[in-house]
Length: 572
Image 1 (cartoon, helix red, strand yellow):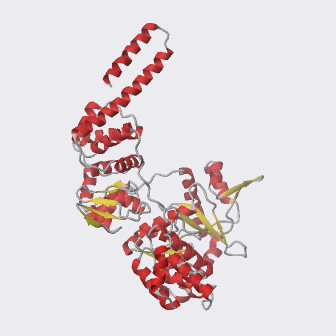
Image 2 (cartoon, rainbow, N blue to C red):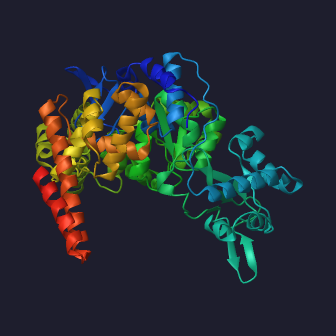
Image 3 (cartoon, rainbow, N blue to C red):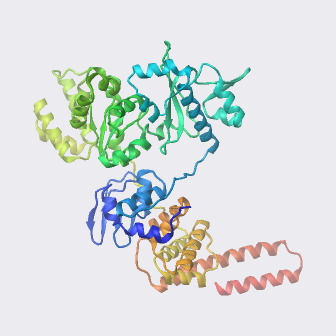
């Protein structure tokens, strides 16, 4: 629970205009009384998110995303409710102290295991046994401040960690962590004599390690924690928790491949950097990147593998409507090597002068082709047309067409003609509202929809509805009724904040908002919804009594129930 009163939360929300805040994240266009924009919470291609300045809420008519300014910031930035409240308070010039945020954690023991292991590794590096590793890091131009910032540690040559963890925690749970193994002789450390770089979840909790050799030759330079219940590579981005706010302020994020690239950039003051940890970018990661900043720059390794990874990441981002810019590093250098050899200023110039995604693709697609050959020319142009169909930036598309036409000495209109006839790339379809076939559930949904808007409907619910059959709707209706009883009014924005964005209740609100769009109602409509719900309850009661009567043997008992059933049927 939060430490602020409902009145204070309402004051904070009302200190800003939801349109101003959301428009700092996504472009909004006025249309009538509301503003519309591309919804960032699904693969939206047409503006389907409506933002109401009068009601101070947003609503997506496609995926159902609904909430106040707090909920938007929570979901966009992947932060807690109270962190979102603090951000809005800062924007509104209201001073609040929310204390330390305690986030709910699943797999609590696994997190505790990693917290202890991190302390253990950090301590090792600062002992006599860590002297050689410290010298190695110093030789790699990694300062004590950077070691402290990134919590770099050291695994020992002995099975010390496994002993500590299995004594303090359930050994089966420790085995799940990916930190220790077990054989006929007992438990043993999986990380052995390596410099330990912790990997974090989105909230900054250590959930895995990458261990690097430093004092001997080894075929495996890095040894990484296997995936566990708290470590899924495709769902995380290295340094996300540090870079998130900086990237938001700069409105720019730089994506790299490896954590050493990020650490190196950090050492020279470039802190809006994250890494994909060497894996192909997933849809989940792409959405996280999209929400960090508008200006997205890819800076992968300068070699052929880095070019291939750049192409892959670019296409994943284009699928969700993001057109990144590209940095290519000469001499096959990775960002870590480039910064050390060329210096910060040279790297900053790269950041300030990235190439367009299409310029990168033109260069990439030329590789291995003989452009004096008509066969390769045709293949090259065909591939470029395919890539042009993937981008939504009309200006970039037009410039690229002109460039290709000049370079290949062909008519622009020929390219445009093929563009028009080429199929568009497959884009994930919008989530469609669930078609409500059940008239009873439709009545429940509509009744609650108007309860969120009117004390009159809440009063009718309280006086005339004894039971809502659908469990999720029943729970939400009770919360609305309770809110009205406690505060004496109903306001959708206040109510949503009162829930503190309870995940399950918010899903129900989103579902109801997808199924109902009409703002106004008549008393006849509300009475009809209540009558349908009562009808359902009566039919269920008749069914229950009929089944009960089948189990009875006494004729008098059967007659009583039969009479009760007749009475219920008359009332239907």
